[in-house]
Length: 252
Ligand SMILES: [Zn+2]
Ligand SMILES: [Zn+2]
Image (cartoon, rainbow, N blue to C red; front, side, top):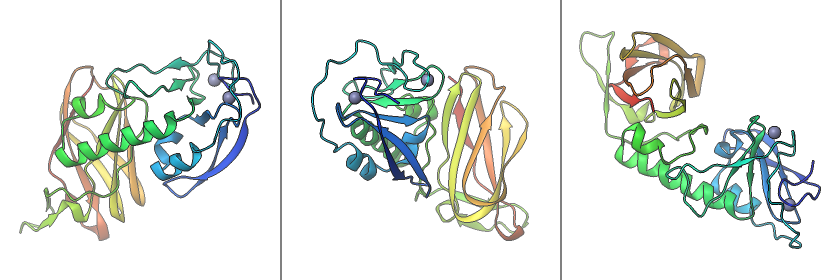
């Protein structure tokens, strides 16, 4: 494969992802750019991005006026969500979903900006539209377990047992994929099965993790645009149904 920016042969580089997998990315030793398969940028740590992006460009080739996907040759478009990424960061995305190209330095800038936004969201629990206008919409985001002081109730028990939500679940992150489709992701400190029950906007129950896991992700389709939805998460550690408080998001 050749570099989308300078046409030199790309170098394969194995990296470890934050979810414990080994993945390959492509780096250009000539211009210092990186090509990552779709979504992969969300599964690398800022430290990894720092290491990757420390590659020193060998030379400065004539740069192409158009950035082309190394897989399909289609022109990759700069993601220009004004609020999505700082103006100093340029990310090119393949229209056929092959991946993203980050010119030299932009991978690290992007990860730093993403970290800052995720931390901001965790800290303030700001609603979706504000929080996620600042992240490239098609990227999935995982958070680690947070320490928000919200409470959840044990519902199977007539006696209300209050448990700190932070002991069980992170604040879910909702990422819009389109105006009718979102991804809801959250993590739990222990391996548990989980469900999401919509209580407003639509009445539906979704199984998120059928087998016990710590990372949970649900893709919800067929939503209405510009609509507000409320849902609760049901966590099942050791056969107890524990439900969170209500979370809200709005489709774009
Ligand atoms: Zn290059
Ligand atoms: Zn492509």
